[in-house]
Structure formats: C-alpha cells, structure tokens
Length: 430
Ligand code: SAH
Ligand code: SF4
Image 1 (cartoon, rainbow, N blue to C red):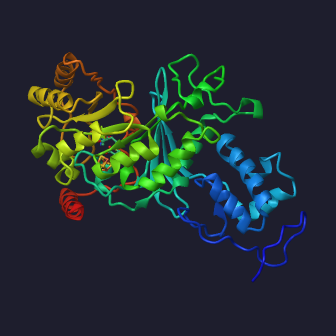
Image 2 (cartoon, helix red, strand yellow):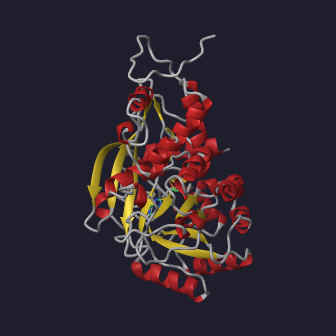
C-alpha cells in the first residue's frame, strides 16, 4: 500500500498530488481541491493526515488553519503568517478557502443589503443584512428553494433544488463579515465585539470579549432566508456550531434565531443540539386557516406544535419563543384571531413574543396585507393581554429584501403553475 510521505518543503511533486477524496457535505469542485469552509476542526485534522502530514503535524496545522479561517477570516493560505512559507503552497494545492460567489449585491435606501449568491455548482440563493439602531441582523438561507409551500411565501413557489452545505451556510456569515469589514485586524484584536455599550448578554463567549471601540455591525443571525432549516438539520447544526464556537466565529447563541414553519419532530433536537433561540411561523390559530396558508399544519397540527414549543429546551421568560404572524387581510387578522392567539399561548404557558409581520406582496400572491389600522388593533389586543407584540417595519422593500420573500432566484409562474406546484408539494408531504 502506498504510504503518503511528508511533503518536502520547496519540492514540487512530479506526480499528481494524492487527492484526499470526496468529503461528505462539501460541494465537489472541478479542480478537485477541497473547500475547508464548513468543516469542523477534527475533519480538517483528518484531511491533513490523509494528505500526508503525520498525526502531530496534522493536529497542529489544523488548529492554526482553523483559527485563520473562522476567527480571522483570511481567504488565502499565504496570509497565514504562523505557518511556514513553504507549507502554504502545499495547502493551496490541495485545499481552498471558499466563499459563495457574489452574483449581485444591492443596498436599499434604508441601509438594508441584499446579496444574490451562487454555489460552486451554480445554484443561486440569497442573503440579507438588516441594520437597526441597536443591532445588525443577517438573514441566512438554509436551502435553495423549499419543499414546503406556505401560500404567502415566495420561496414556497420554488421547488427544492438542494440543501445548502455547512460551508455554504457558514460561508454566508463569513461573506457578510468580509463585506462589512468586520474581521479582527490583528491577533490582539481577535475577540468579537458587538455594538458598543448595547445589550450584550452574559453568555460565556461574549462575556470574555473585548468590545471593539467602534462596535460591530453584524451582531445577530436569523435562519429566515430561503428554505426550512429543520429539513436540513445536520448541515444547519454543523454550520451554526462553527458560528457559535468561541474559537471560530464566536457569535453568542443568544444572538442566533432559528425559524421553523413547524417541523415538530425536529424541534427537540434543535433545542438540544443547537440551542439557539426559536422562532415559529405560526401565522394562524385555527386548523382551517393554518392548513391553507402553512400546509405543513396538515401533518403537524397547532396543538402538537405548541406542545413542542412548551417542551423546547431552554425556553424561559428570559429566552422567549417568537411566534411569527404574517398579517393577511381578512384571512387571519380579526379580533377573534388575536384573542385565540392569546388563549393558545396561555393554555400552553408559553414564554412567548409575537412578531406581527406586514405581508410583503409579490406578483401572483393570493393575499393582501392587512390595513395598518387592523394590524394596530390586532397588536393592541395581544399586547393588552401582557404579550409583547411588535409590528415589524418592512425593510429593504425597494430591493425586495424582506426575509422569507427572497425572489430573484425564482422565476415568475402562472396561477395554474402555482396551484399545480402546491398540489405536488402537498402530496409529497404525505
Ligand atoms: N422556513 C422557515 C424560515 C424561512 S421563512 C419558516 O417558515 O419559518 C422566514 C419568515 O418569513 C417566516 O415567518 C415566513 O413566514 C415569513 N414570510 C415569508 N413570506 C413572507 C411574505 N411574503 N411577507 C411577510 N413574511 C413572509
Ligand atoms: Fe418554506 Fe418557510 Fe417559505 Fe414556508 S415560509 S415555504 S417553510 S421558506
């Protein structure tokens, strides 16, 4: 059997370099190199060993490379100054430090930014950054398309093309840091800052952080872009682990929110294995209406969903579950709906907050947004029952940047096509 040899510094192999082989969860590249982004440290150790380093060197190099990749955000091996100069080309021959390709970047008049991104195998998806007074939120995609078909959601009109890999998910956060210029500039500046002086929490990672004087723009992440994160559980978990790792991107789990349409069987695992904040796309309080607008409700009903919320590990008054509620005219916006919402939240004793989201219309959508007065009244009723119910201000409308409504990658479809697709997706739901 061929035993891989240690590379000789400066020596160029006359034969093709041994390829470490296809790696699970990594999109294969035409040049055969392996993209390290998305891989945990242990996997990098294994790949370095397979490529010829002895066990000790593989471990040391992986530790160094991991730090440069995830903590310092470098995109070239040449920039890894504590790795021997002769070693850097050896790495570059076998590995790459990938980022999703940027097809288009737009900035809204309100500061919201949207990127159309492309995977190495040429599938497009989107990412949005929403700056606010006290935070900056990155809306991250988990899939290209979606298997579900919520009737008010534009992504629901697309077929699922494929799950995004951990690298493509964490790569979005890394790309945002690239674009915002938010990587630590030097080794002494490697701690993660956030908006200076604002409400940072007592999580270990952040408590140990020295806040940068000017503050960071990207402080929060929401898994609310394209796709249903709990139908791509492993990849979302692996990506978020890199985001939360104190030696990696080091963003506190308290600043990350995962939004689900209600994939009940995966919710407990999400709490246990990821442990971020939970948002649930409730959108309706009766079976009839929820069956229509969030069809996964036919599989996992409201009671089951709310019970899973009550059981969600880590939910407490300090860490409330967010219920998303899109305001659809004459569909789910009556006073009775508001009262039923309160009753359900109280029945399941949920530490909850309700986000009222004005419906963001798109061509071919079968709904209209509720009037501002209706939304205000609905919010008052919920608020008067002691439940926080902020109305979300639409952001980046001029560039179609609303979370859950990312549409550049989807083609326009006729009503008949939309109905056919809905039928198909329903049948697949079982
Ligand atoms: N699949 C997950 C996460 C992505 S959708 C989920 O459904 O929760 C993120 C949020 O955007 C969801 O609450 C979704 O219902 C909402 N959304 C989708 N389309 C919208 C639209 N046209 N207007 C307003 N909110 C929308
Ligand atoms: Fe998919 Fe979420 Fe859109 Fe529903 S709202 S179709 S689950 S992305």
